[in-house]
Amino acid sequence: MNLLISVAQAATEHGGHEDVPFYLDTHFWVGLGFVVVVLLLVKAGYAKIAALLDARGTTIRNRLESARRIREEAQALLAEYQRKQRDALQESQDIVARAKNEAAKLKIQAAEELAHRVAAAERQALERIGAAEEQAKREVRNVAIEVAVATATRVMEDKLSAAQSNALIDRAIAELPGKFH
Image (tube, rainbow, N blue to C red; front, side):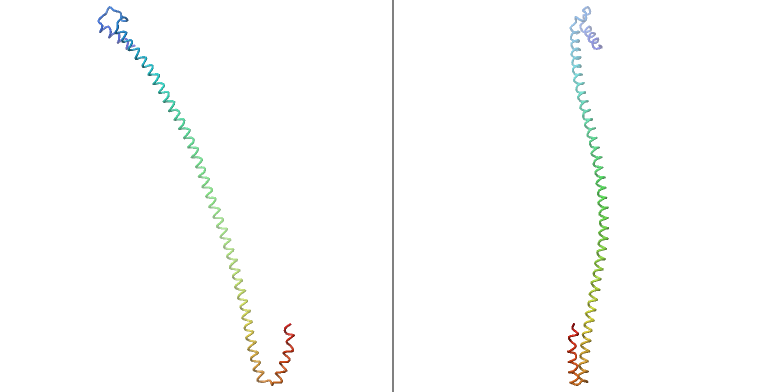
């Protein structure tokens, strides 16, 4: 409105025609046309600017909504991975506990098995010692018998006559079948 008044005043000042009504002055119509064109351009520009701002606002709103969804998904994923990490940690602790229990059981089994093997080795050693003692006793007895027989033979040879020796031999031969059964 102020623009129209200033255009009308400029037309009267430059034109120098004071007796002509303002609506007949060409300056008035040029100014009015200029104002109308500017208003049309402003209106068209305002609509485009408003449309651009609305589109920009919609784009920003969509991006914000997308970012919110992505954030929620990321938080859900983070919570899931944290839960999986806790589960994996718990599972690894369970595995370690089971391994320790199994190791303790194996240690006890190994100790028992070692004790059984030591006892078996001790029994075998005692049996071998017993067998060696028996063998040694037999060998000592055989040597003692051989020495006694040799000594008895020498004594008999020295003290017995041939007739007495033959009688003893015959009697020993007669007793042999009873000694083998």
